[in-house]
Length: 118
Image 1 (cartoon, rainbow, N blue to C red):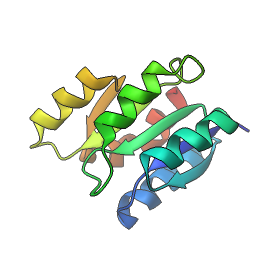
Image 2 (cartoon, rainbow, N blue to C red):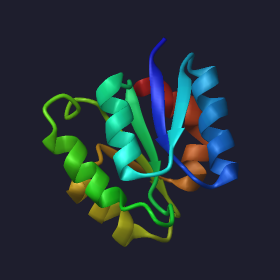
Image 3 (cartoon, one colour):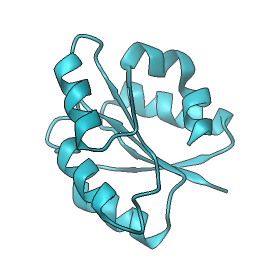
């Protein structure tokens, strides 16, 4: 079964990711750092990575740059979600390599659809 790699610390959104992945027919592995995300993905390539771009203590822009620079991972889509008021963070994430960035409310409403697409 294809899995979704998640970098999410907020319990509310961790549940949203888990529920959405389950409805999309995917399992989830959650990690808490850039290094864990890269190491996990290199061992067993995920179908996609989903990240809370408002996650304290994790440099998601660095994660995107390193992910897209790796020839093994560069084809794996990156989906980020961010508070709708953080347009600056959304633009920075897209510039760093995220394939798609949506508002948290959109992610909450459409998690299964978004996670199935990757």
